[in-house]
Image 1 (tube, rainbow, N blue to C red):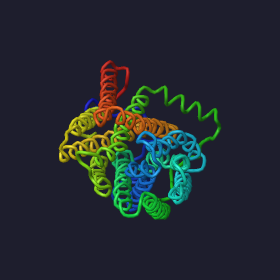
Image 2 (cartoon, helix red, strand yellow):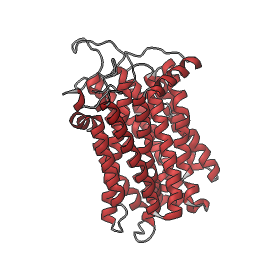
Image 3 (tube, rainbow, N blue to C red):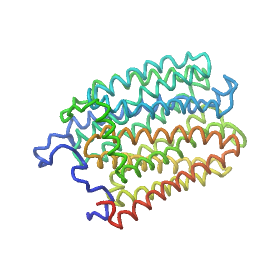
Image 4 (cartoon, rainbow, N blue to C red):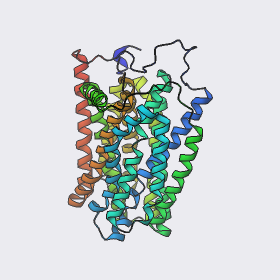
Length: 425
């Protein structure tokens, strides 16, 4: 396939810092290898635990509002604090992974996060709940960047997009199962028992992850020196392609964070007036995200990176507009399209970051994850404020603006490539 048709970067060594080798002598994992299957399942479970914990309160916001007597904009901080904590700590945690190893940092992060998860049900006030959620998010910061760096080092380049797509698919399953389980459990026993159940699920995933994940073979210890870290970050931020990918990740997550923070309030109110368990089951549409994320590699192969991003943005925007309907069926269809577009766009952008960075992959991925979760916090907070001020139309308006940002950035990247200022293939 020609460079112009794929839209992926041609920076030398973009797929891996390991010297090029023939397929027969390449010891990195590939589909068909038993280690690849173990690795895929282990990181899938890590993704499940991460998203189940990170968004464990999102489907429960109406109940939390009622319990503590606060508005949606205040209760939404239980989500924004977790994603904000992750955004702030993902870069320092990525630096630790350069020194102590990806698997070690991921294991420690999950251990701390699940421990805090077992304390969350006992929060005596909204303030205490927000603090615990911020600590939990900070702990989870060791997962996303370390996982993508691990994959970039241990998986053959041709299988990288698919491998990262499977990790993102685990995110979608975690987000879905966490919300569905909490919805039905909370309907019977309250939100505290519901988040406790999610904590127990995350413990099981964390144990299985550590037992299954193969030991790294291509990791090279990096430096923890602040000067070295600052230089690496500066180099990544100086790359125009990486800057665009970071902004795209943040904008996609702004849409997603806003929609799924507010949707529970909309569906429990008139004209829908759905019970909490049914509202939680709405998150089964995350299964669509599992499929779209895991097939992102084939999408890029057919349309190129930028073509895939255009399609993801258009799908998300169509879903936003459909969700304005007063018909429950059309609202659900809108959520399906939003979810499919978001997860496809996220998988494409995050895998492009791993391919583009030739050194300091953990930091490159960390910067993407930081932008991504800043987008989540922004979407959760601004989306809730827009809903309070203008109803669901306000939240949709925020999402549409974010999608327009994705399209604009992608157009600028396309024009830059055509002018020859960005080497692309």
